[in-house]
Image (cartoon, rainbow, N blue to C red):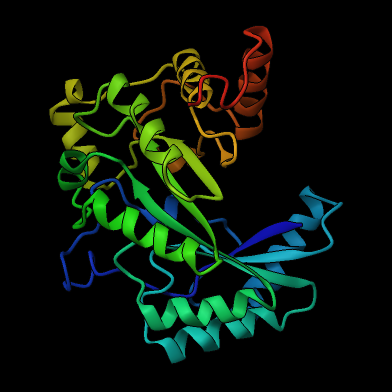
Length: 288
């Protein structure tokens, strides 16, 4: 099973003026989009190119989940969402959808529709939560608080829909202890999966300007420091929650700077696994 990213041309209320403009201060979705997907191409064509791409990298994949990733993929009227989702599901070999969105971009009718769809195919909603601290969410211009994330995650889970969440470590103003405190918040949520990314300063974002002006406001992980941090974090994390990612990758042309050098995710994963083995520890070892 392999995820295939598509860009269906969505935006978000933090960009179109409904709540704000310019988006979150760290955001440049081009830095996270695979080269094979573009909103100017038909959805079917994006899926086809994505599958061809993954057939080279992951030869064992035979089934696919279409991953609606860039921006907020529930931020549209329900008839438009239905048309996009159901078109994706008609592609041969596609057995489900993963839908990335914001907690403030989903409503009861959309959740009810996705509940019904999840009884036929695999459906997962992945919410961008980013931080558990409201002071941070305000600083990065999220335009919603952590309370809303908790409410929507619980509501989604109660409908039997697979529920994931995304978090960023290293956002401005947060200490290492602030970030380790995430474990308590996350462990109490009914999440099926989480993704963890280290903060990467992307060129052309407002966060790049902020970083240039106030670098001391950012906790900057070394690679070794991040590995140790992740081990400490997951030792306290609810072991029932699947960790889908420990870190993120941004193409070098988009990076403002990198203290890690050019290291791929699979190398980071091996380092985390090696450290867990060396310390004889595991996810949830100190979970209570």
